[in-house]
Length: 257
Image (tube, rainbow, N blue to C red; front, side, top):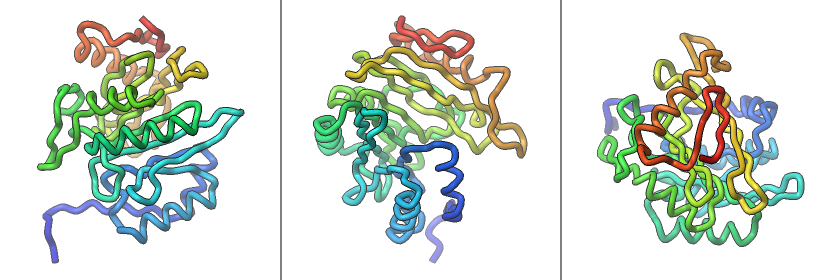
């Protein structure tokens, strides 16, 4: 029975997982609006594939809620959230704060990832309020991210808007509100790769933006025009007119203000 006019169901061959391993990924978030596209069976298959590749993952409610990775003597905790079915809920404030606190007790650095906010070119700017998209409560991402830091998160990476959004430093912790896309074009085809350095307590030290673009039918590549860096600088000034605690150079270096 057809219940909607448009349906997007994404399924990637398991063999493609090796490309993620070859690229050096240590962790992947499963919390997004397509994780449950093929139900529990699809989630189980994804988890099994990542286990074989030794890639950590989390973000699925009551099954894979947190992940811990030890690297170079540092224990990293990963907790991921989304407002969607099967995901650990971004809008369940009591639960997400508890999960972050619990993870912090077991690790040195906690990295939170979320899929939230409205989508598309009209969603570049932060509304500092709850965002409703296609009738779905996609959360108040600024409130969520700051509460995540208050609960023990050291770095917060947002996703889901399909465009790049502003960044900020909150209580010495780095927050990116959306990292754009790597599989679309136009304003949605520019994206940052963030390199973030913290101290042992998780406090932001420095960072760098590697600018990525995708044009036509080409795969993502480093953007010599540094378009996304310029865009983030603009969004920071626009969305945080009183400052966001950070300075970003035209070359992409991120420093404390």
